[in-house]
Length: 103
Image 1 (cartoon, helix red, strand yellow):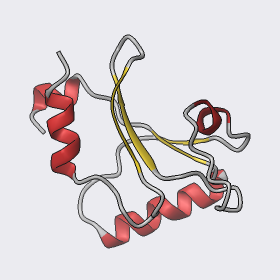
Image 2 (cartoon, one colour; image 1 turned 90 degrees about the vertical axis):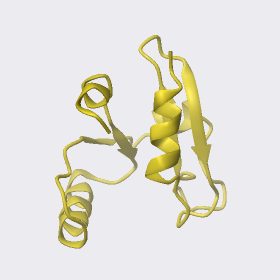
Image 3 (tube, one colour; image 1 turned 135 degrees about the vertical axis):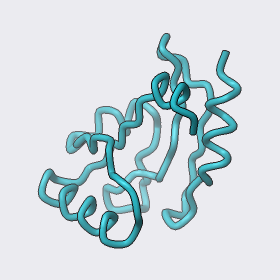
Image 4 (cartoon, one colour; image 1 turned 120 degrees about the horizontal axis):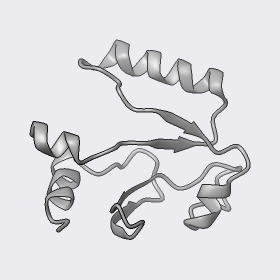
């Protein structure tokens, strides 16, 4: 991602994890991967965001389906990736391509 693209982009992660569990996740990610973890993890303990986007997994014991959304400055969802298998995530290339297609 170019410097200009970074300036036009904000990354947020939303989960049902507690604050302590989120901090543990960040620590594990930093131990496993290189680079900074420089975006906030937001708690959605009451499923407000998860329910709004229809991500609650009825078979997931309260866990939502993993999803990635690209939302423009007007609040319009321009791209989404929703998967039932929590091990599958979009590639960086898929996300960057979708970001570059936003007018």
